[in-house]
Every structure is written in C-alpha cells, then in structure tokens.
Image (tube, rainbow, N blue to C red):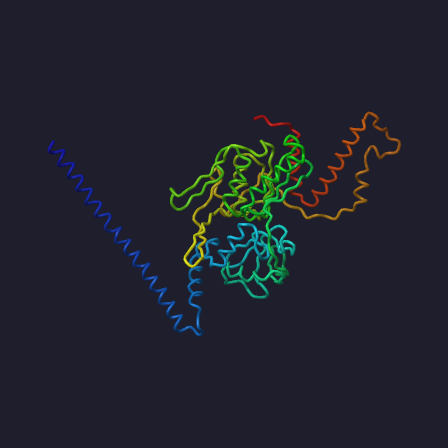
Length: 444
C-alpha cells in the first residue's frame, strides 16, 4: 500500500515538475512576443511624432491615424477596412435599399479597383460598365495606391454631376473612358414577371426588402396564372447580384427548402461557428426551380445558389460565380466609425468553401450577344412548311378550339425565339423548366 502511495505521490510530483518545465519556456516566449508588440507600438509612436515635427507641410493628425488604421486592416484581405463615420452611415443606408452614387459594386485587386458588377437600372449599367472591368482613373486622377474607400470617395459626388472613369477591359487593347452622370440609386431588390407560365424573379441585391419582395411577387404571379397548378416553374435570376445581408440569403433559400442546412460559418475558433437550417414550407410546393448565375454573382448570391444546388432543389445555370466566400462583421468603434473585419468563411451544406473558387453551374451556359434579325426573312423561313405548298392537303380534322390553341402555341414559340435572342441564358433556363414539366409530375 505504501509503495502505491509513494508511487502516486511521485507521479504527482513528476507531473508538477514537468508542467513547470514546459510552462516556463511558454511564458517566456509569450513575454518576448508581448515585448516585440510593445516595441513595434513604440516604433509607430516614434514615426508619428517625427512626421508631425519634420514633414515638409503641416499634417492632419486625425487623417494620419485613420490612414494607419485603414492600412493595417486592408493588409489583411480586400474586404477588411475602416469605415469612418460618413462611410458607416452610407453603408447602413445601402442595406435599406437607397443611396447616392454610380451604381457599381467594387473590390480591390493588387491595388486596382475592379468592378464586381454594375447594379440593375443604374447610371453605371446604362453607361456600359461591365463586371470584371478595372477602373484605373477618375476624372484623369490615378487610383493606384489609394485604399478602396479613398477610390470610392473619388467616385462619389452631387447627384446630377458628371464623372469620367477610365476603364481597362479584357479583350480591349487600350483603356477607354466612360462618362457617367451620378444619380440617386434606388435599388428594387426583386423584380418579377411571367414568361408564359414561368415565374421569373430577378434578385438584384440582398437588402432588408429582398425576401418580402420575393415572397409577395411570387404570390402575385401564382394568382395571375390561376393557381400554383398552372405555374410551369420558377427562375431565380442572381446574375450580377453582388450580395448583401446574410439573413436575407438564408430566408430566400429557406423559401424553397423543407429541411436541412442552408449555410454554415466557421471562424478561427471552432466554437464560434454557426449553422443555419431550413424550416418546413416551400413557397412553390416542389415545382421545378432554376437559378441563373454569372461572374457577377457574389457572396449572398453564392449562398443561395450553393444551398439550392447541394440539396438538389434547383438546377444552377450560367457561368462560374465570383467566389467571395468570406463573412465580414461590422464592429462599431468610438467616434461613430466602424471596422469591417473578415471573421469567418461560409460553407455550403455539403461542406464546400467557395472562397476564391465560386459556385460552378450544373449546366454551363455562356451569354450570347443579341443579333439583328431581318423580320421579313425570318417570316419567310417560318412559312416554309407543308401548309405553304401549292395544292397541299388541308387538315380538316381540327376544331376551332384546336386551331386557336395552335395559334397560341405559335405566338409562344415566336416570343421564346425573341427572348432567346435578347437573353440567351434566361431562355435556356425556361427551356429546362419546360422540359421538366413535359415529363409530368415528379414522384416523391
């Protein structure tokens, strides 16, 4: 028994000794790290004082500190930044769906300002700005070397004022100028319309109004076609949608899912992760669904596309998305400013991180440029059939109702052909829904 007690005491003593031997170097290492940080802060203070005392001109001390803070944040990734009070106020207004400006969503790559997407029905879109464009100058002043916030400030101005941006575009040999007149940007989160019996929901942004607009528009279209049984299916158009509020992306995804995970977020610490799950109820009761995406679909758009794709609830059509798979937290600071800090990555239900990869569509469909159609020539082509031949036998078996149905089908075919020329990707999505419905109801 004594031997056991001694052995146990010896083990405890050994454990204490081992802990002391391991903890000692760790504490010393932490102290050295803290000393290094304090030395760097002293260095910062020394440089700041030397600038104040010796720079060739008087400096704005507050602006100098703000620039240092912003430099620290922007060195982390393109989406972390400092928001001074005015920018913080503007951001809060944008999430409510109205703000002043050009109507473009931008990011920064290697010091250059890159357009994620022009927003629907804004001065930038009307002037011809495209997703992927690089803006190098504003009113002949170079943007290289500026922070993203500084570049955006240069593009702001009074409503009705004119701005000239210099753009570098892939496929163009030389930079070129685009003149834009600033305007108040009123974002309609969701536009909706019927194409035949197919509901098309054009979601341009994820702000406070997105889910209510989508739900109300969908219910209105269902009523217009005489009930959900008469609806062909739904197209959710997320092309050139730069994202927005995470909670709205979750609500839009949940609108078409009965159960399962929608998205998860994971930060530095595993315990800080969040999972968001669907609740029972599908607004279209299992009808076919197509999601349209392209390189301008980012962030919240990718959450929706990824969730519906992973659950095999929708066919994703178009081109690869932007690949912004990070989550930014807005942290209010003293002085009414705020810090936008990347705090986690989000993952689709299957566990995919799409950061820098994007969502690959189920069916890759490139957009086609519209072509001029000679209406007389096209009409002549449409008339080249058996019925147009001299002396051909007429079909006497058709009733008046059948003839009217044939005429209606011909009108639908002509409208589809026109849509295919104007928006090839959307027409392709509608073709998919038409094909799925031709197979009859799906077995559950």
